[in-house]
Amino acid sequence: MNRPAAPYESIAFVASQTPEATDALARLVALYGNAAPEQADVIVALGGDGLMLQTLRRYMRSGKPIYGMHRGTVGFLMNEFHEETLRERLREARVTVIHPLVMHATDVAGQTQTHFAINEVSVFRQTYQAARLRILIDGQERLAELVADGALVATPAGSTAYNLSAQGPIIPINAPLLALTPISPFRPRRWRGALLPDTAQVTIEVLDPAKRPVAAVADHDEVRDVASVAVGMDHTISIRTLFDPGHSLDERILREQFGY
Image (tube, rainbow, N blue to C red; front, side, top):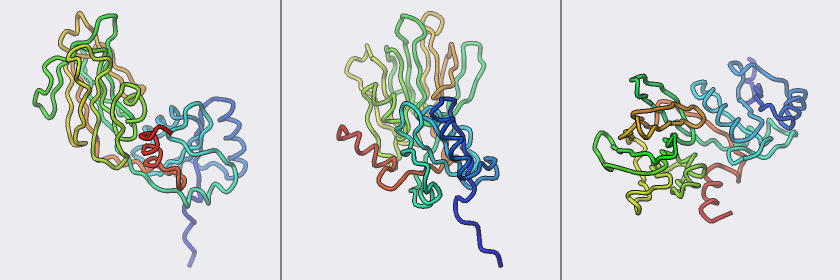
């Protein structure tokens, strides 16, 4: 009887278009081959966090584990780049399961677009005037009016990204929570956001979309002139991410809380 194939024997590589990433891709393909993603045991992304987010969204329904190696600018979601012993590193890697956010954004014409986000869904003012927003949680009004540059809903994986820059809380990767964080709030001045269960459905309504237009963004997918945005975590989609021992995503998030 044939022995089963070794875990992660067949690798699919994806890379950003930077010279650093394309050069790494050529060297790795020469060493390990390059399987089609649908046939591979694992997908290895070469680039920065932007490429990693694209890869996670593109293959989030594939069931394939995804391992990133840093060949870009920001590499919070990436492992260090080494050409040698890649299969051994993959076999020793720790698995972190993440779930995406799903955004349903309805514009002023009544058209709804659906997009997924790994890090966060944000709403922003489109002009010089602050946005006026109404916030509901599970259908119940929690904030009648937020006057601000915008607001965002972040996953634990995304809590150290834009959410942290907006003074939002860092969330441990396995915590069943979402961060709801205002962006440059004017009124109420002392509201700094909320931590919500990751089963919560967040609805953000734009109170004056004609005078104060607002855009909604799911990671990199933007919808302009929105009237309302519904956001929730999609627990039916589980994405397996791989990290080297000692450099797991939960370890990195913990380090961020202590400033290193």
